[in-house]
Length: 221
Ligand SMILES: CC(=O)N[C@@H]([C@@H](O)[C@H](O)[C@H](O)CO)[C@@H](O)CC(=O)C(=O)O
Image (cartoon, rainbow, N blue to C red; front, side):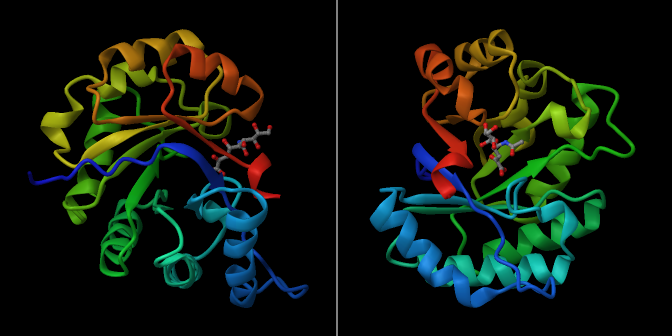
C-alpha cells in the first residue's frame, strides 16, 4: 500500500508557539510542553504552526525551526506531529511541505490562501494539489477555517474528487460551525480518512455526526 493508514484520530492539541519576552521563538519550552501534553492532558498528537501557534504570523525560517523541534521532542513519545504548512505564497507552502517531509513529520495540513481568495472549490483544490505534490508521501489534511480565512467554500465541494488530485489525501481539519457541511463531508469520506473537528465548543455535535477526532486549543493550555 502506497499510503499506510496512519490517520490522526482522537484528541490533537493545537499547540501555542512559545516566545521569549523579546518576541523570539523559545525552543527550550517545547520539550516540557510535549511532556505536559502527554502527562497532564493525556494528549498524544499535536498540530503545530496552525492558528493557535500563529503560524501565519511567523517567518518561514521560524516555522521550520519550530517544526524541527516539535518533531525532535515528539519522537518516540507522540503518535502524530502534523505540521501546518499553509502560506499566502504557494512556493513558501511547498518549501515548508518538503521540509516537513525531510524532518519526519507525520502529516501536513494546508489552509486556504486568504488575501487573494480562491473563487471556487476547484481553484482551492488546485492550490492544495500543488502543495501536496511537493511532498507526495506526506499524509495531507485540508484545513477549513472560514472565520479566519474568509473563504466560505463548502468543504464538501473541496473534497469532491480530491483523492484523484491528491493521492496522499488523508483527511480534513474542519474548524467551521456549519455542521451540515461537516456531516456531508462525513458521508462523502472513505473510512481511511480522518475528519478532525476544530471548534471545541461544538465538538460533541461533531462527534455525534461522525468526527474521528478533534484539533483544539483547550487541551493545549
Ligand atoms: C480559531 C481557533 O483558534 N480555533 C481553535 C479552537 O480550539 C478554539 O480555540 C476553541 O474552539 C475555543 O474557541 C482551533 O480550531 C485552532 C486550531 O485547530 C489551530 O490552532 O490550528
